[in-house]
Length: 184
Image (cartoon, rainbow, N blue to C red):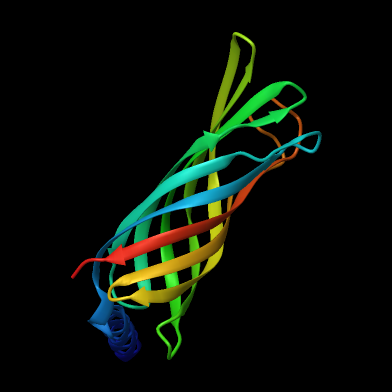
């Protein structure tokens, strides 16, 4: 009986500490919106396509240490590999943990659900395939004045040993450059 009370007290203490951490430093809480460009790489172990994408990133900063968000990216410059044009669209829903430095710069880590759609076009023929996976990334965000920031990050959107029915290793990752504004 006493052991159960101690377990309940410890559990309550953990929950309260978690809530306190979640709502601490609530200086940069609220929605944000960002736009950017992504230099993608889609590599299937045989060929590599490198399209350029534009993306929209939006989310909510719970506090200066935690954020949730989503990103949509669409190819604006296809890559031609052996006469086949490739474009890769990505969707990424993520949670983000931030390490805030004194200058307002922050190092961040992202993880979440990603989905990719790859379209291959050769003449009048299009082949489209999509799949989901776990995405993850790391980035650096730096102050740009007011509530605006610049950021650069690396995100691995997709990494599988098999893409649907194709028995090949397949990786989609990218270097992203973005401009983000937080709203109060």
